[in-house]
Length: 68
Image (cartoon, rainbow, N blue to C red; front, side):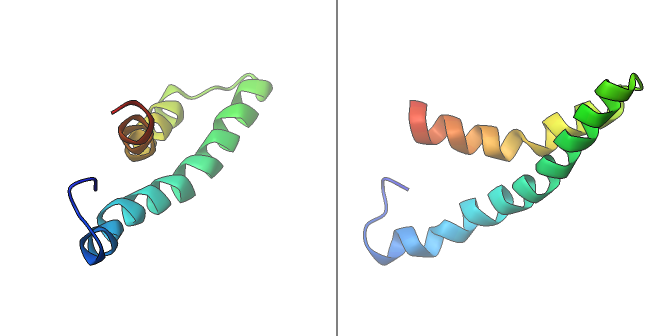
């Protein structure tokens, strides 16, 4: 968003915020599910893999924000 000034940054914000919010809504319950499965001794790899996949937009935005 560094290239946009004024209203351009506001217009481009949904391109970042919507995937981030959807990812956040999916990742948080999935993390709780992974932790509870781990404590019960019935960890399912697919649940954890899907959690990581759902977290990719958050990871990408974090890297872009703090490291680029």
